[in-house]
Amino acid sequence: MGSTPSAAAADYPTAVIADYVFGCMSSNGNTRTALEQCSCSFDVVASLLPYDRYVEASTFLSMQQVSGEKGALFRGGVEQKATIDDLRRAQAEAEIRCFD
Figure 1 (cartoon, one colour):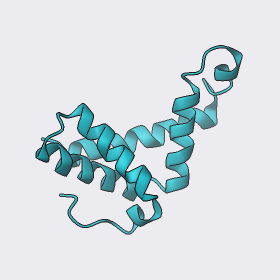
Figure 2 (cartoon, helix red, strand yellow):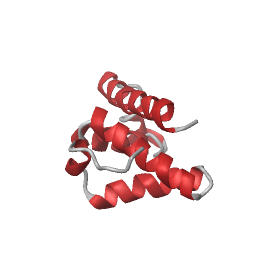
Figure 3 (cartoon, helix red, strand yellow):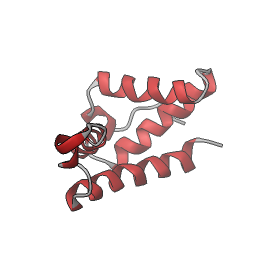
């Protein structure tokens, strides 16, 4: 369970990995078990989603939070939806594989 980094994870910068795992741990109780599950979760996401696609999805999700016309550019587009759906599918798979 997340003990050996995957080759795909090597394409992700360390700060991105740490941010993902810290955010996940914060949502899951900041325990040793959460660390193991969240590390596993990251490995699954990284194995299913290339880093560039992860950045795109994260950017779209972040920009959707911007109010007004600027944020509207990032809501509802076909490309944005497909990219975000890819991330959500990877996260759902990680949930199945890594969390009880």
